Image (cartoon, rainbow, N blue to C red; front, side, top):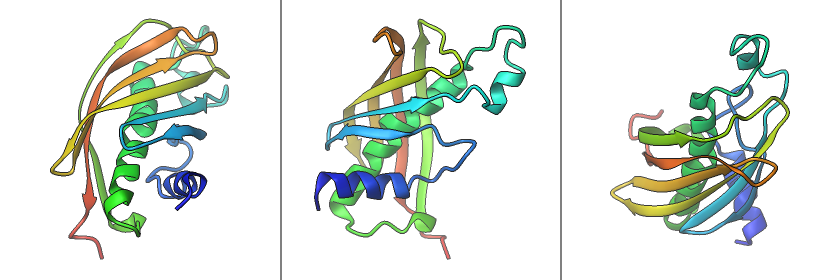
Length: 156
């Protein structure tokens, strides 16, 4: 399968939708690394109450963006390498741990770039080192995120 088709398949099988989808594009992906982008819409629901006169993206949302691009996209890529068919309804995906440090705010309408490097993938658990950069290529946050991906045996 060509890389473009793999990326399309990953994006189509992400277990998220608006307003909780934080992946616009995957720029590059392999067994060990992934890079993708997301632009935070100024109309996003969380800006209405997070510092009402000076909105910034909440850290938990930045962590989720890093997890979706840096963990789930890479996890789906690795999963696809051993399972040719992904049936989204039968996948069990869960975040098991995260440790993040934050350095810069992300403002409404800002585009971010997330990079991720695999630390390990074994027994359906993927652990990655993630970094997020703003449009000026300044480090916004970094950390480690781990999660599980496997077929859900309870799916109908």
